[in-house]
Amino acid sequence: MVYQANSARYESMEYRRCGRSGLKLPAISLGLWHNFGDTTLLANSRQLLHRAFDCGITHLDLANNYGPPPGSAEENFGRILREDFLPYRDELIISSKAGYTMWDGPYGDWGSRKYLISSLDQSLKRMGLEYVDIFYHHRPDPETPLEETMRALDSIVRQGKALYVGISNYPAELAAQAIDILNDLGTPCLIHQPRYSMFERWVEGGLLDVLQEKGVGSIAFSPLAGGQLTDRYLDGIPADSRAASDSKFLNAEQLTEVKLEKVRKLNAIAQRRGQKLSQMALAWVLRGDTVTSVLIGASKTSQIDDAVGMLANRHFSAAELAEIEEILV
Image (cartoon, rainbow, N blue to C red; front, side):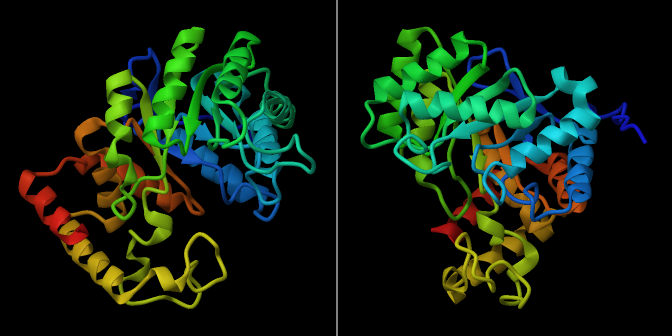
């Protein structure tokens, strides 16, 4: 059966200008980090993408190493794009990244011109695309000159392989330098993708100020702190949870009793607001409009529905913000 997108898909989503660019992003974007590789049923990945687009989520975020195994998320997305989404290609913002280990040898990691351009060529082939909308350098490279990395991003845009470029995981000072280099080259930095949540707030130490000053957008990944900011752990650590597994992204040691007590107090505020803790956590990241979009992961369509439902109540009173701040300190 041919996929037909929901005709009302743009009615439930809020679209926000990305920095000083002409591009608007949905307040909620879908990351394909997990649940789109070869270890996931393709039918489930397809269902998630259908639901996301039907809810107005137009931005789909990938990277060369997403899977598992690395590369498989792009391959599977490319198949679903070809079979279901080609009529809607111009309604989608598709992003990818390079910066982490992708292949053996000295040219399959970090930030050299050789690696970035080769990696994007591979990504485009896996997805069956002529270009991506956004291409990121995924993390700073301590050895490659920053000018080389930024010149590679500039070249990628000039070659027509990406419409915009961005950076991810860059600290404030290095981000400012990268943005200035790209401006001088004539290819402005569109966006920065940092980790940001109630439990990880390093971006407030200068990065958000830099982005505001320079007119660069931002998209927060891991806004639920790997699942900590959900109702999953209110009563401890379930045996079938991520924290109970050997996941390197969340383990039982992180969920101390002090942390769990904070989760419970935050959940009480969310309940008073008439929403789930996960919804309040997403809304909190978007507070003040300094962050353009929150990047969610999903293994079930209900998680996408919950995230979109947050938009009905994403603003906070001054008293609520003060109460949350007191818990988080």
